[in-house]
Length: 110
Image (cartoon, rainbow, N blue to C red):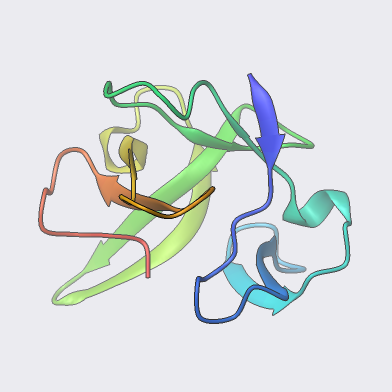
């Protein structure tokens, strides 16, 4: 397992961050804090996996579904099918991956 920050390609100086509530994720200015560190089993695996929070790896990113709105939250990983993702390297880009929900193939972290 390795530790990573998750940043939008359009805003590389911003990173996915745990908000104060510890259940909602937001994009904040990259600071290098542990709130912005994520653990991934493998960037080269084509299998489904969790993106776990660095400070407490029992928790992973989760798709919170409410009607037609889908938000990115943090939830216990164990038994959470809405947290499984597939990482796919973007061709001709260095260190750029799409993050797709494994159970909902048309849903991506954006």
